[in-house]
Image (tube, rainbow, N blue to C red; front, side, top):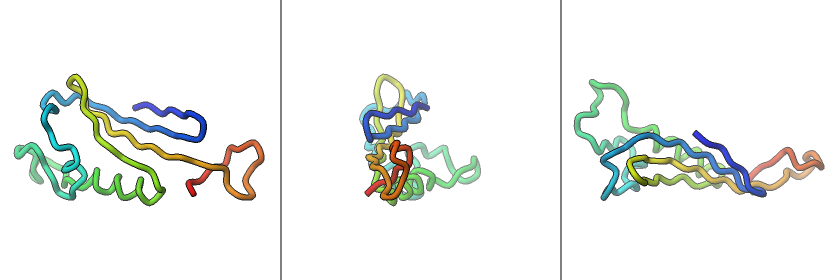
Length: 98
């Protein structure tokens, strides 16, 4: 996991090994109950809704969430653009998305 800021942009990335990632349609990963690997089923645990929920939360705060694969690793990246709240601290430490 990594967290980076640049100006008023916050980037959060979570990555994991994923050797089978080439030629994969990552947009489907955010569909509820989608499972690329048929061996992952409810008996083995999980429901396939975690990324869909995460995407909904990120979108609620006007951010973006995407999946990216490179050299055997998959990364899920959230990006938020922030501004200082009206009436917030003058040092700019309180932020919200507009």
